[in-house]
Picture 1 (cartoon, protein in one colour):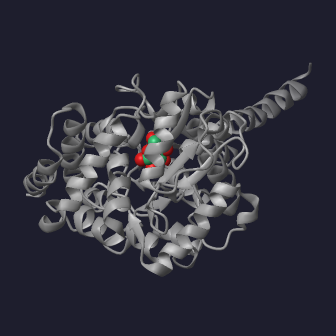
Picture 2 (tube, rainbow, N blue to C red):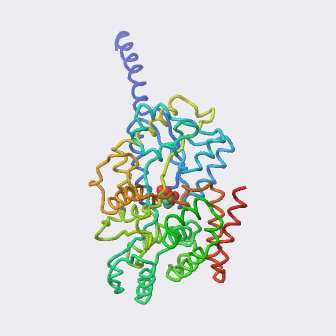
Length: 427
Ligand code: BGC
């Protein structure tokens, strides 16, 4: 090789090499704290990861197991306090305002403006995502809470002719399922799962207005009413149908019992559909979804959202900021909204998507959402962080789970205890 050729080789290597490195190199990293760790949930969040990676960014997954997210929140607080926040974290409802007050959040107004979020999102949803008038979070879905999930084959085997529509029918179905040797209600005895059932019973027994008074306004009269005594008595009754092996059990392990035909029913938000979908089962044939008995016409919701944190000095690079903006952008694009929500069991949060691509449960959810909105019976879920601060929610969780574990607890005293606990927590 002569000198000129040698020089040419060096030059071409020098120009080639950076190209090779660049192709493999990420444009920036977005770290996300979330609690989507069940089989179906992990599949769903993977959709977001793949899109972000396709855009050339690195997805750093910081999942913290634990349904309902209490464990994830503990990890997040520790990280925020020690000055090591992630780029984004799953935080919902009024808590977004609490984090905003701490001056730990950044906004994605540029992304929101460029992608017309104000017209894409329902006004109420947009308001929740803003702190001080700025978009600090991006919503990804709408989950309905007040559902009952049914394995129709199991119900048939037990001689239950149709899905229960009232509490009396629910008890009757429970009796038949138990008599036939099935677990009547698959249920994991964890505070947030107990409180899901409690919340549904409040809807069923006290109606939308009573729910609003008791669990949103935390009104003393509603919380200490005879109707609330009925709610706790019904909770005790339902407990007798719950899985005897459910103590401390995760929701998805319990869901697996309904899917496999060991149990007949489960009271859970529609993320449970992600497990059915991941198991290759179809809505309407393999499983049925009906509103929690007695709560027809009311729709309790939670909205998953990813809240954006100010990056630490070390991580505050143009690339990482671009990665966060990309996450915010893709989360509201139809491509993601369709695939993610089909996997997750929720319905899209952006307006105007074609619901015919979704299964019958999602279609029912979208229809019921619109009807409840019109009727004024669309209610934010207390158990899923949409109606209270975390402190008040924690107080309610404690009272409900103490009631569940103390079989001798008096239903007529529990409401008063709840009111006192809420007052103390709200101070
Ligand atoms: C979230 C869902 C999640 C569920 C179970 C809820 O708080 O909104 O997205 O699937 O918890 O972990």
